[in-house]
Image 1 (cartoon, helix red, strand yellow):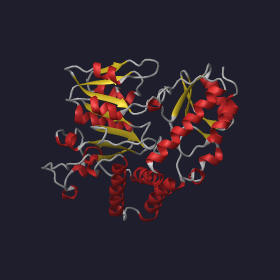
Image 2: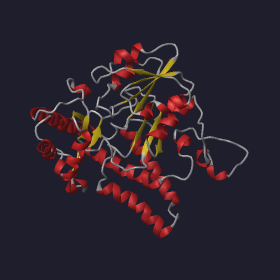
Image 3: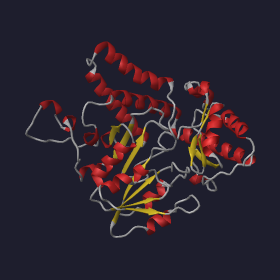
Image 4: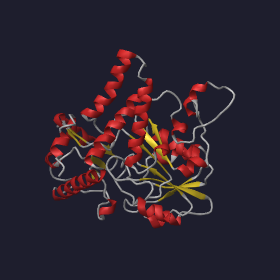
Length: 370
């Protein structure tokens, strides 16, 4: 049995507020804070004499992230956010064809493709859901990429990646996992995902300036990076100015220069906690809290806009209809209940450090639905 109360104690934010906002930015655990702080203390006290040690720790983080999503370490690059990862993916796929996405997407899943003059076709959602059949229908001789979020930031819709992988055909499946990595199980091999990117500052709970990108070995082998740096070379210490011998791993494409060690080490500590608890246990926990939340909201007369009729589409974030979202967010914040404003209402996120008491405090503060 998981002692969720003990896990909750590892997050000081729970002592200061009712934090239901991991979909915007997740709080840090004590261990994650210590991992980043240790690097800065070493840099403060010793300068860069720990360089080789830090590089090995970076590789350790890479191995941990790879294990989390069932990838190989050489398929993982450590980034600073979702945007950097998505652009690395586009470097590898920019000649692969036009893109199929949807109208619920966060713009990082669409605009970077358009910036490269790659057309993006948006499948229209119906009552907050995107049907896999409609994605299949959108395929034609010009399209070659399906780019979707695992969980939609806009309303919490969770896509069935296993089914998408089965029906993708010759299309490359690209996944924005920023709203799911750290909360939901991801298996890139079973799901037949070709490329995936995620930030660390949301459900991964590792702060701004952390993240990762996955490129399958097949994708790496048949493409070439647009940007390179000295650490992209097979022998970076050769100081060669007349020959290019690129490394053959995903990291060579994005870890272009001296690494952002603090973000990497924070990410590693967060993955340690996720692995200790177990991603399947976390997924069950966040869904259980989400079910409790949506039931209590409905009981109190609030309309849930997230697609929850089917358990397979439910996620750990809930969109709640409200006439004055901005005013409601301020009212809740005055009571130290933190949620996000959305055009249609408020977004509530339930991560594994939350509990039923957090939800009851929210319901009490909301009162009767409008």
